[in-house]
Length: 334
Ligand code: NAD
Ligand code: TDX
Image: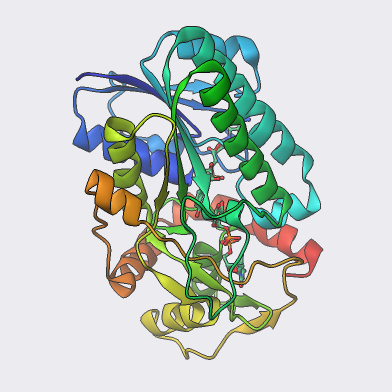
């Protein structure tokens, strides 16, 4: 079926990778990228896509009139737009309340009014963290227990979606994904920060002891999971997306250094993040079993090498954000 979808946050990291993915996989679909172009959004992320099929609307999801008009004119909304960085949320939480909670509320009101389908993008961080030796992983029944201003606003947005499904009968699904990596990720985030520090001739920065575990998934696999749920997910359901990619931060930094031909131990320990979640791990068996989804990027080293090559070849893309990002880190001592 031909669809016209709105991708909120489609000029950010994961949203723009999703736009490119859908552009390739569903050549008949129309895509409206609805994005405020904050510091994290970048027109270049969707450059080169056919203007007949991909249109950019620069607007805020909190703007009731703009989001209402956009939603009225589409078949479905895939909602990626968010303030997404934990460290920023610890120092200026307010934009997280506005975009992640109030913005999601405005989208819910618009899809309710116009009877449109919504897929809401969320994170595994809503579940809090796990002990290193906990045999259980996060699953759709795990109670919400967020730690940071970022994750608590994402948890709030998920709860709003669930309430709008139950109370107002909107058509919506939710996905909670683990840590993404791949091209077009802002250099404030862990993997691109380290790659670009090395490319700038500086040492990577490890928070605390580096024993914290993240469950890495290539952003292309996140995209295929979202498209699968958008097309085949059951109304009102939550699906976890993950690809069994658990690694601790220390191992990831050492692997990046090794792939880039450096001494694997040549990194700095910097001050830890307050409230730093210890471990995330996803049980994606519902998505595998009910919807038949499978990840393609199962070799982390290969996916990471490709990502490193992308940053090596695209310094024009990341250089303009690098100095201001490091200046922010300098201010907070990390
Ligand atoms: P990002 O910060 O790279 O991009 C966010 C995008 O949203 C930007 O283009 C920004 O301009 C836009 N935006 C922000 N506020 C807006 C507003 N008020 N109105 C319209 N647009 C606005 O984020 P990302 O890492 O690509 O994350 C995308 C989504 O995926 C988020 O919902 C995030 O919570 C979720 N998620 C991220 C990860 C991860 O590893 N990065 C993992 C799981 C889930
Ligand atoms: O320089 C660094 N050194 C470091 O050790 C940075 C930037 C991070 N870290 C650590 C903190 C985390 O344990 O690396 C890990 C990953 O950090 P981030 O990239 O900031 O990601 P995280 O806080 O895990 O959250 C990410 O995954 C879940 C995304 O930013 C969220 O949007 C998503 O919901």
